[in-house]
Length: 236
Length: 79
Image (cartoon, rainbow over all chains, first blue to last red):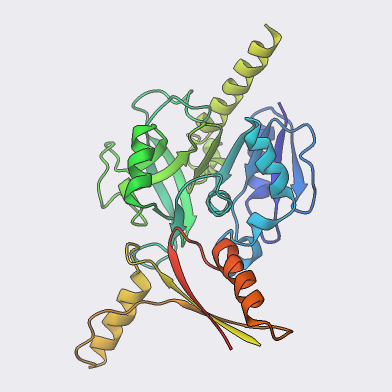
């Protein structure tokens, strides 16, 4: 299963994402933003960083990079796409995910470990997360506050599209546990079709014990499992 | 021709920058400030003289790219 990690000018979490996937035993390569094809990629990771300096709005310019046409086609064909941090911002700007990410409510850049509650294991990104297990993952962002209008939020709830929410050490969705003011404590969501996901926290920075937490692995392992199921289904 | 575009956060969106600026103004002694909203201002210099064509093109650019319709409103003026 091949992972493609996009690179935009000023992406800076591409190396960590590549490293995490390879560490977990799967092939990964970079795809420069000017390329028109994703090759034989099975999964696309849109990594974190400050693409185009966050000019105009975070991800606003990256979404028009040539490679994003290929990503849109790939997603339309059911391919798996996961956007992390700036990647999540790029995906919302590109319309591949609903809503938007705005400035943290306290105007501060938050660089800290948080707890995530997995709202549903019914997705290619959460199927291997044991029910009730909280994920300890770092965030590092100034514009991570998830916003969507009432209608969209209602739809996200009805369709089970909220994947991860900020919680305290006991799994409670409190305001104190919310680092940026995100509505409904939303840290990550998926699209209606459940093949595109985005999250503000960095699972690629929590995939080895030496970094303080290996909980992020569970998200990647969910993707591996989903792909294996896909391949098995095709072979059958 | 010059296009002047003002982009502001939608009313429904929390505007912590606006609030912070308001607090600062009040602390500095300015009274009677009901609200502050911080937005963006763009100036685009254009060739040609056909305002209508320019307006149509820029309207599209504003909607597609220069503003994010999920969280922002825009006002476009051409002179």
